[in-house]
Image (cartoon, rainbow, N blue to C red):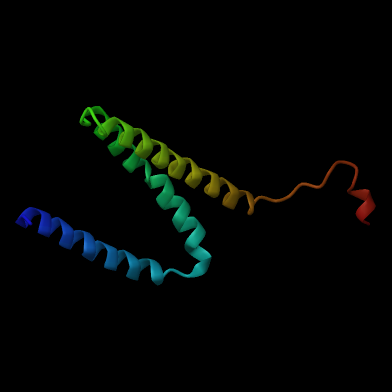
Length: 104
């Protein structure tokens, strides 16, 4: 194992622990906005997958790149869907026309 790989593995493991500690301290009320924002930010992974697809090895690289682009796209668009649904919960609901007098 090279020193560079060991350094990257150490940073990854430390990032997992720090991420877990940060997320575990978030109140449950804030999980939906936090997750919708992080899924939208996942677009960075989509850009990285597109860059890898351009320089991928000719055998397995293009297939894996297409799969990664597809999964990253699902995550990005899912983040926007969750955000839109969450924001629609805070919009005032309009009553159907002609029902204003019936409620009195």
